[in-house]
Length: 238
Image (cartoon, rainbow, N blue to C red; front, side, top):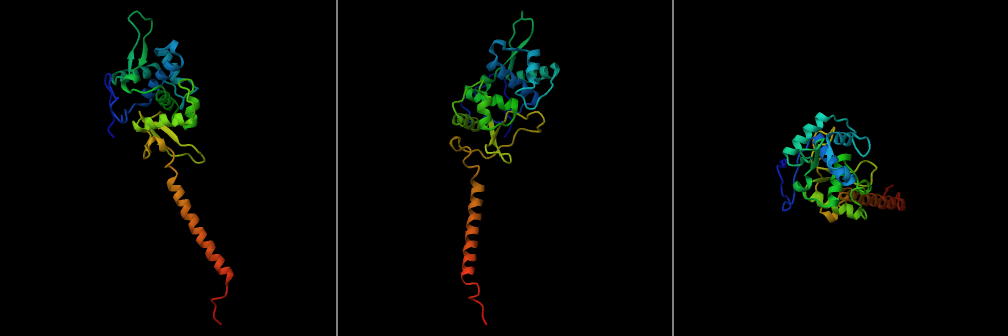
């Protein structure tokens, strides 16, 4: 799918899928930090360049941990501004320039969807259980069903993709599709999307079918062995 480049205030309410916005890792981190701090520390929002640098490079709630300087963050802000995703928020008399995000204008999202997308931008792929716990400061999900419902809406708009399970992991992971994360060559690859009410149900179908076939084969072999045990030499000729 061709990447979608946002410019100005774009109304996407009537679009079923947004596609890949194709942000760079610094742009993704800057946008995610602005979104997080708006929800978790509203008194300190909008953010100055220094506050944004500290947010981008903090060692908690970030994966991977990075060490961005102000030049890199300023460049990311300029590119995001050209896309219509951030803007300068401080007035002429302000002592320091401050910045805010415009994600709500570009991609209308409810609180649950915004919280999930923010965590995926800042911490990489997550399971529904991890999202429920790590979104708590931004949005309190009642249960995992609420998380799955929000993930279903985001996957329907192609903002999030469901990934393969890791070995030994029971829950599926989900990744954002706004752009490649730090250390990742390109955005996460999609799996075939399931309807929101069936997320997770179809993923195990091929493995289940293979298991059933194996069980049937074993049952046939057991029946054959039992027949041989009942008459082990009955077919032998003198």
